[in-house]
Image 1 (cartoon, rainbow, N blue to C red):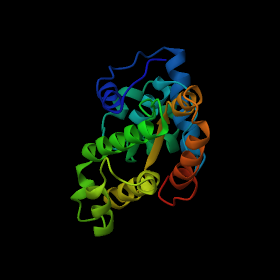
Image 2: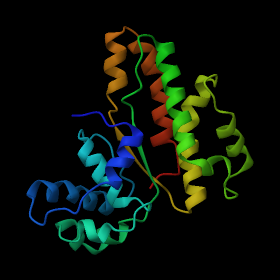
Image 3: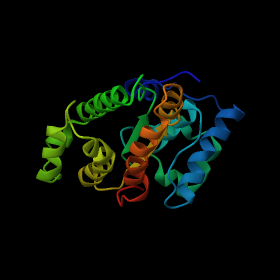
Length: 212
């Protein structure tokens, strides 16, 4: 499927037109929102389609207030619990499409740049009075020279900052998660990448207490 960068994902979600009333495929896609709302603690992952990721972000994100207009004619809107979850959460939409490089060091450089862009997209990370000074310093100091350990902790601390700032645990949606691994295999540093990704993903999705 077509690769969508973080900013493009935001643009895609904001530009979604009113949905037709009778399109079975869209109805099936949106019912994934109901499945997630029903099962507490589920981490959205592995959907494989950017459309599904964008639909989930658009449905759950508190950034938007017109979920009723977009989803009211679909099956997902008929369930009370699912409807109550719409527009309720801070949503962090991530794409690993740019996590590539011809060497492990080049990949790390691209990951640092990706996280810097995430910080710039969330200015409250360095300004919100609801976030601790420790987190303010971490995000302010993060740079293209930051250590591997800082990279591995970045997403966990970002989720914590989202929870503190918005007062509710965020949802993380991950797209193109396989791209770094395919790239590393082709460029012969798969072992280095595995050693780097295991703690990063563990800290973000397993060890954290800051995810819905």
